[in-house]
Length: 505
Image (cartoon, rainbow, N blue to C red; front, side):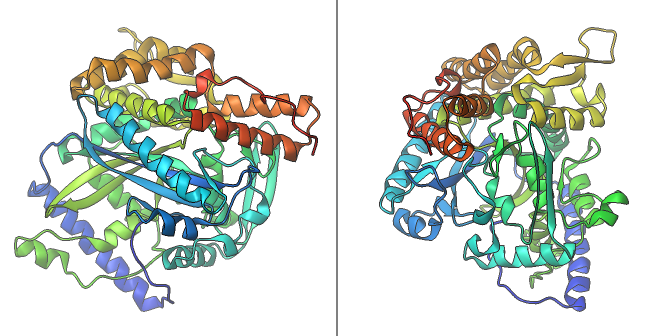
């Protein structure tokens, strides 16, 4: 949610005016689609990576303002809490050696940011949830000093009307409450953008939803929160619970959470924007002066500011994005499934797998979403979050018999999805060297049943067996993670455990 908003109070008339304006924006979007005003195919992708600031002791550092001042680059910006940063990588055309170029750009950017963070005794760590975060770190006083975060927090808290309850039952169970949305800041992710034409949007979004569970299975990297070992990818339940505007009564009535997988396959991008208006009340009813329909009547391109702002407060795992570049509107699918890290090579491998897979699946003559219930995709996502690389998935049966079958995620990826991803990357025009290198990383994770989450958990337990306390083991695991992240070898090659005895703590 990059909008610059000013904190303030809203009254009843603001909300009614905003709702009316949202409907006008939706009509404007419908006209843009009907008039075929959107950009032509450009094969453009982009990515954002959320980062943590960590001290040499492995603990979070609340210093993003000071670090951003030193970085002094528009590619870096604040995130929700003061231990978070985000780096935005400029759009690239899919093709050639794009993934190697991306890796080099990210390597250069993060090395520079890490050096600047070092000037205030901090460092950059890419990880889904920082294992050393404590409940006292995730309080409203540690939210970034930016109006939009203050306002968003105030509105979500007001909508809920009571404390947020975190209850995640995994390897261990965590139950606690929070008075703010600050626990959401623990979730640091990679967001993958793909610009698509309106005609291809539904197929790409459906494909992205179908493979969200597989993405998590191979990429899980968030097994710890507040000292507890939870799900292999604990971000989704944490994100949902820490932004949940629904008190228990509304949950019981089946009201949808703002962090949402969805509930159906779609036939148009319009479906998603319309659902967002129909199901979710406004959190930030800030109105723009633009009259979108008048702009359209005059041959212009409306910003649809209210629709864009509202869309940014509904946290779909695959989010539709309306944007304008060089005066021409376009649509993007924003894939928000993956945790950050562990290494740049791992991030790029996850991206290559995703872009190849959605291209291939979106172009199949019998698409996977016509052969699998949406509920199965949602269940796959849940299973992958819980079990990571060891998850089992429901997937359409191969051959002419139809139906679905339950299969190990690693078998599904190796036997069926990696070849599809290779086909998809070839269709994008990605060179074989890039395809082989980065899809090979995914294959090796599957062969070894190893990813960031499995490494973190195994190293933590090895530290406990060596006699460390839980707190010391989590800190030592985090420090070792940071060392290996900087060395850059993909996570499937990381040795489990700590390199040498650590003083008891």
